[in-house]
Image 1 (cartoon, one colour):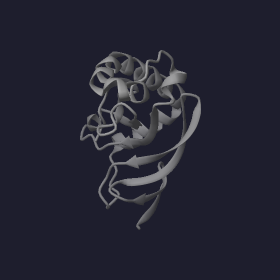
Image 2 (cartoon, helix red, strand yellow; image 1 turned 135 degrees about the horizontal axis):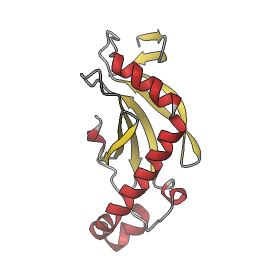
Image 3 (cartoon, helix red, strand yellow; image 1 turned 90 degrees about the vertical axis):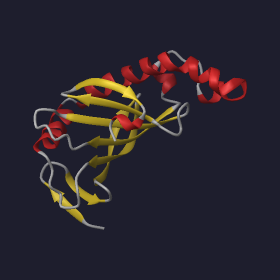
Length: 159
């Protein structure tokens, strides 16, 4: 597996994107996720990706807190629909009735922090990808642009 040492991103290995494991704290728990810098195997990264990385990690605590709030708010908007579709047998396990960030930590699992190619040097984009109990097929994502949450939804919003 090809590896590089980038001055900003550190040591990365190529596997359909340049990746390494990092730790983040989400919902009060330290988790290991995959840092994914989206690029071809030539390691030609965009300035926007480098800028997004710097801005994100300089304000990581605030941005992850915003993501936590956005995830909880999104769940509170959709869980009743999921409970109805899942039926009595699965509703409490897959889409439980919750109201706090502590409770949602039990039904989401952060997996990846992606810095996608954006083709617009003026846009700093970051995606947080998570697995979740209520949507195992499509997962969950939080999309940030210019250090603000712009969307929460299925993982394809950042992939």
